[in-house]
Amino acid sequence: MALSSVLTFLVLASTCWINVNAIYSKNSPVLQVNAKTYDSLIAKSNHTSIVEFYAPWCGHCQNLKPAYEKAAKNLAGLAKVAAIDCDEEANKPFCGQMGVQGFPTLKIVKPGNKPGRPIVEDYQGPRTAKGIVDAVKDKLPNHVKRLQGDAFEKWLNDPASAAKAIIFTDKGTTSPLVKSLAVDFLGSIAFAQVKDKATAEKHGITSLPSVQLVTAPGEEPITYNGEINRDSLLSFFSQVAPPNPDPAPKEAKSAKSKQSKSTPSPSASAAFSRASEAHKSSDFDDFLASSGTIVLDDDLPTDSPLPIVEHEEKPMVVPEVAPPIPTLPTAVDVESACLTPKSGNCLLVFVPTTSESSELSQPATSALASLAEIAHKYDKRRASMIPTYVVPDDNPISTTIRQDLGLNLAGSLEVIAMNMKRGWWRRYSTEAYDVVDLESFVDAIKLGDGSKSKLPTSLGGIAPHSSEPEPVEAAETVAEPEPEASPTTDHDEL
Ligand SMILES: *[C@@H]1O[C@H](CO)[C@@H](O)[C@H](O)[C@H]1NC(C)=O
Image (cartoon, rainbow, N blue to C red):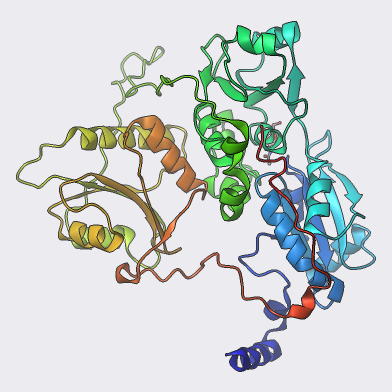
């Protein structure tokens, strides 16, 4: 096997240098940028980035790779870890402009006061994951106000900013996780952190840390009672507005309205969050263990029920009702909608019904109503909802898919998301089928977050772009054993 890969390498190397040369593979957690994309991906981001300027032939660059990729995993969701190949003709002038004189050169790019005018500093610290992670965390933009007493009340009652997130904590510093969330919702949610107990108690907080969201001035605060990790918090805050797409979508031709500008570009925002998948469990999941549970309030208000929109200015318009989820009655329908090798995200709702008895169980009814409403909400803000279909039990493919995926057999409700192109599927395993729960599931899929399973080959799953690490190349690339970076030290805390 080793011999054959060497041969393959030689063949490829002689035919296409560029691809073989690139230090970072397509699946690397390191974001690859070039002279063209640097501006939108790095310079205009509201997040801090670290950028490695490298040349593929440079030994120190190759030595840096494992540490740099490790840093990228640790910083996923908090900052961007990027690399640019200065050996590529198209990038050479840009690297020169950036003052690069040797390889690798590492620069930390922190957003400045003016958009697109970041503060760029050379990173001169140790070339270890820990050294890089610590230095970058130190440069995260902080949009979280630390407030107490009257100053906090004043801020809370200030009608100028519409939505507010409040982090009650006993910590004196703001965690990277909170800083990154404040950046994601910059412009739509103002963040504050409150340390003093008296203020927390006054606001009914009985245990720390605790997160509250005020969706609009005068609204009752909603207490967050999910797990403390980036993905869940992102979904929670998304009930106000979607996180800022990063990079920002290209200006619409006519830049019609504010609404069209703020329309999320899911693929773009996913790009930033995607890498977090890889390390989420290891880095963030023990947050609760270290910080205690923060369940305070069980009756989290659900979203408004089916929208009965009141058109004040246009009284003639019929109230909007969410259109129902379409049904796929035959196997061929399901195959062409979701099971071709090119099919992207699909949401399938297996419902226990047949064409003879169209009576639906209560959970099925509420799942379909919730999904219809979510689709309708997406539609209203002109975002594209994941294509969603009902598969009734009397569609013969229902049994096949249920069996292949190990789901409950006919007669029970199942909601799954799948993506043939990427070769994964995921089951909705919450008992409740309300809008809030289903919407976090949908949002997580759209953001590329959460754990997924490989589609079995029986369904045609071949997982072409699995996120498995590429095979380790040569031992010589590791110059010195790196001290274990301990990424869990602070960014799993509020
Ligand atoms: C940066 O933040 C501003 C709000 O201050 C927001 O309008 C913009 O979309 C954000 N840009 C990106 C790329 O996230």
